[in-house]
Length: 361
Image 1 (cartoon, rainbow, N blue to C red):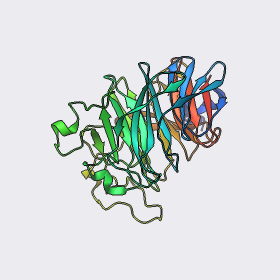
Image 2: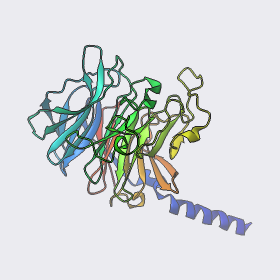
Image 3: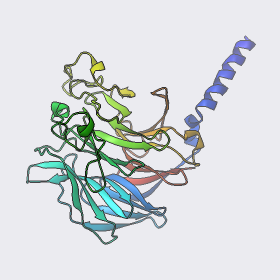
Image 4: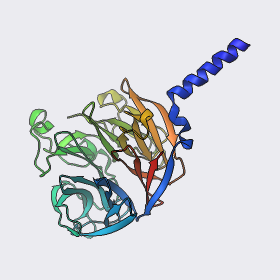
């Protein structure tokens, strides 16, 4: 009996050694920095300032030390509707890039990307990308953006609730695009090397509504998170010319009326996610953690959840996400975006509680 007890004790010690972040609730501080309105995306301008997009139309700069915000004037013609508005935002080499729902008529909108020189008074944006498809719908704009090491810009273009349009490579919805910072097209995009009929910006197709994207400087790979319908959220890699299958394949999900989603029986016809969730967790932003604040997370993926109102922490091993732990559950509401500063402190945008938070020791 004593031997069995010792074995159990050894297992518990091993468990807590492998999963030290399960006790993180005693090791971190979660502090509200400032209240916001419908925040969606953020990026660092410098160590002291964040630029944040608010879906209802404001772009603000947050002074992290003073906990103040400054509203910037801009010229974007956006549509603030169900899921639309000002969405992801990036700062790079004194320029601001924003992905947004562009208003084309009183009823029609599309997913667009614009750029402006950085100016703390007024931003003068001009489009570098506009989706080929406009529709009277407030759904599934996508709009998460990411730069790679060669300064190529990747962005998710949601399928706008139009389902199988994501299989049409002569339209943009339901895809991951890859463009240069001036909107021109890299010469290694699939159109030039795989299929001449592809729209030139398309890099990957068959997605529904990707809400997270990150670049791993170690593997030099880009990863996305994607919303399924009723079930079928997924995490996967962005690979040139591949097809995730939406909506012939629904990654285990069902339609909102509980009927079968998708028609393809053999999902091996499509590119495979690295992890799926059934039921959905309302998957959102994703970042790979590198920093000194939480060293036991180095190289792990931190994923936000809108539905679980949590951060999900995973290790990627042998092309599978493992060792999941949920933290800060039900503390700040739905987690919309994640950024990590040079010190390894984690900044969070909460969706429904509309605030900026910091997670640190």
